[in-house]
Image 1 (cartoon, helix red, strand yellow):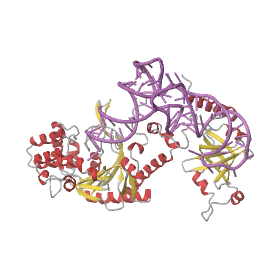
Image 2: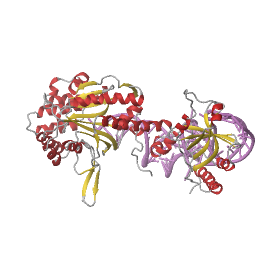
Image 3: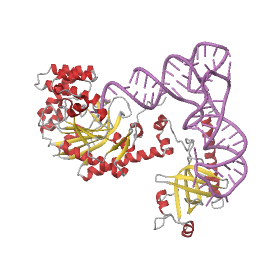
Image 4: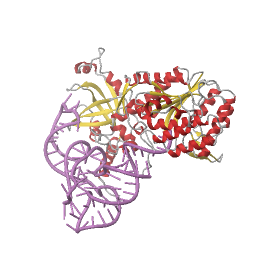
Length: 517
RNA sequence: GGGCCCAUAGCUCAGCCGGUAGAGCAGCGGCCUUUUAAGCCGUUGGUCGCGAGUUCAAAUCUCGCUGGGCUCACCA
């Protein structure tokens, strides 16, 4: 092994560890009792009037405290030193003074490295510069850090190392810790919000024998005993609706989905999604609830409703715009009216807007082979959606509910009463990104059978991302699914929005990376 | 998968019209018993991502490879 500088630094620390073993017995003791967090210790230095107590008052009170945490910085004077100690709640300065601690404690302090986990017992006091600190009476090293930490001022910058060694990122980058705390608050907020509204949380299978609930390419795995291939789920939707049939009228699941697709700053192969279902509600009810959820969450977690995201000031405080697909196309893409009815007209108009010709050809073929009287209209609308993605999405900066999607691309949604080629569905867009997808659920089993068959036709025509025919799901619908609305919200993207993160990798603790070496 | 960019000390970064490697932080030694990115003096530490090529000479120029970032495509 080549002698590198890093090894030298590690060796020096290992030597200190060895000395610690010799002078102190156990190098990794586990008998130091911490009864309070640093935040609560700090609170004890605050008087009843909310002001920090004076040094005289503190000395008179002789408040005994014990704190434990990671030593983040040391200012040493030889015979005295200040050590910045951090635990989960806060940081606290510790003063180790040769005259004030026992001899063993001072010996231990001499073996301290930045990054070590320490335990301190002492009294509260205020330094000359006014900082509440702990004057150590005893000082211990509870766990030695054998590796040097990144630089204290710039932290760890390299994006790959921050993701591969998230533990180091979290030690040295305050904002990284804060992002993940916010993520956790978001998840808790949603749980509380739904629990208050009488929803119950469930866990449905992650391994699916049949692909369904979304259009995406799956990961495939294999069960040895059953000797069957299984898909890691791309969505929990069909299981959750089975539960509504079963009587769980308000149900949700917030957990991972897996999609075997590319990476981007908004896509990770495994990502967290909430899906919720509410019986006797419509997609319009969910729109209202979603708006309220986003607004109240921002207020609760951020204390404001305007957030900076992808270079925009996103205002979550105003009512979200509601934009039907066709209206968006008229506004942003000069859609000719016949494009909404006639497949060929849509096709020609679409090509002008640079939709993918191959995908469009598949749509045209699918409907040329069909005898459905609505075929022309469905075909036209499916192509309209392609144009929508090319032309309208980029304008959707402020929160916008896009509504009235084509039935042809919504195999699980209820048709609109006013127009059977459209469905009662919305997607929420913020800063041109999709944040949620919701619809009134299709609960007519005959219609659902037809939709599944249409998916199979699409697959035969060349579409690689179709749902599979799920007979048991049809059987469940035959037992009667109440009128129900359901919604999925991407939690990672929501965390990006609430933390102002540009990349999904900044809000996932351990994003997927190529394996090391 | 295409295009552009990046890879130098443990970390953050200079050096890049070729001449044999620098700073700050961290570390080590010394001074310092109230510091706040402490200070002062001294000092260790590098296969310049990997592999070829051009050249008397490559961190620097060329090509390939690996890993990463941004972006487009695919995709929600």
